[in-house]
Image (tube, rainbow, N blue to C red):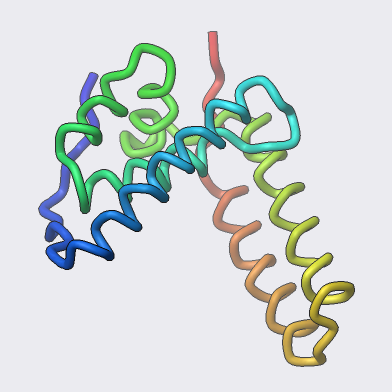
Length: 136
């Protein structure tokens, strides 16, 4: 089982590299918490971590995709097998909660009240069209 490693340019700027690397570890932490906490989606956070590590550390990218528990989330998605139904629903619920809270409560601006739901609709269509992975 291996994930395709596309040719990506490594981030050269030291400050940006450290920032992206730290974001990768934050995403791993949130992904792990999401395994146990039904409010946080695991797959999107681990995909974000994989993208961050791919640009900053080949070693940690390899660690993530070969991890006995976490690697499957990334490999299934990158291999075209999709996301588990539960991960899809949690992702959508969290995304819509944050977008609507932002657009209508935290930053109630007409442009955001139109733009964020449109972006959310696009992401929803994308996630729902992904293959649904059935876990054994």
